[in-house]
Length: 442
Picture 1 (cartoon, rainbow, N blue to C red):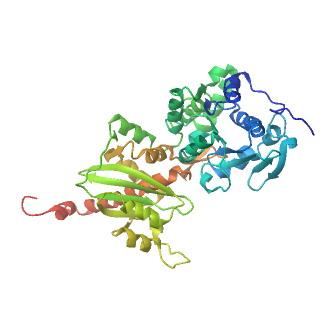
Picture 2: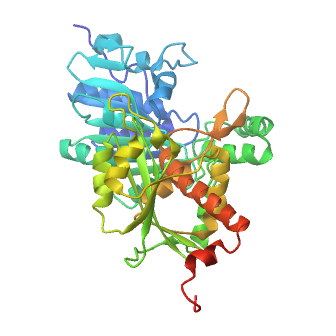
Picture 3: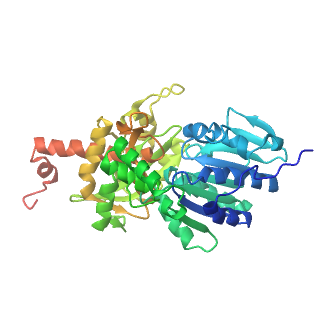
């Protein structure tokens, strides 16, 4: 039998030792907000190797998206050694089987390790993990932690959150909660703290960011990536400015449901993805967003049942145009199915995605948003952003599709519906008066 020392030929850097010591001493909840090149994934990989040999169980290394996991972790090569990072962390002596297809390793003691995405965690089969590394958590679906938290609590498992900041989003909230909880480890590591690069190297990095992205975006990226700053907004985010302004105007807070008013819902339909719904009430020019709900891999019949089980009196349900697509197995469209379950139903006008986003932006000054009931929806809106073309170093003219798309697309149904209604009023300026008239007093 060959004896292997773990970590295998690796030792934590000076600025990584505080986190490593916490984990070695039995810590189970850690948040590390750290700059680029800090070595976040290296710590996660080597800790997974140590823990897998000490405790039999499953470990996940979770990236925001499954599609990026292979390149970022499974196939990633250490430029200093030319070896795959997983081969450095997991020497062949401790590996029983390795499956390239689903990025899975079984160790000789029965423990397992797998690379997954926060966008597919609930579709994985097998035993739930006892340890999870949430890599780049600021870009991950926060629902993954909400889903896994009770499982890890029940089995005494651990969670390590490693990320650079991405604006004032769920990662910052998690950090603040961790800082207030003595059982958690919480640390923010700026390049100024670690001194991993000297001033000359930092200036070179800053100038490269500016040359590639322009002065404003370049500096914001540098602050985000190297200074671990939460103040820099998510680059390319569509609605961050509008949300922050709504907060300043105190239009985000407690917005109670008014039983005297009807509720209208706005949907984004998912098959493999999530189905998202905003619940809204209208008072004059105000649009009150009183609730947001999301379902993953749930039959439409169950979703419709839960919607109709709420105490609201509905005026209408607005759905995207793909609701009219017919199922091959039944020959019925989802519109027909939902109409039989929901009653009144309308299909939102077809409008280009960018035009729909602009329609939402135009309406944002009318929004009053319940901070608690719409928390997941607000998080989606904060993270909804343009797709970045890494080769051309520029944003594309369409959104990046991830977990934040569902809630944002559902709100877009509200935007395009209102745009059509407002345009109709412009064409017929007496339309609202005609609909509201009821005798001379009206």
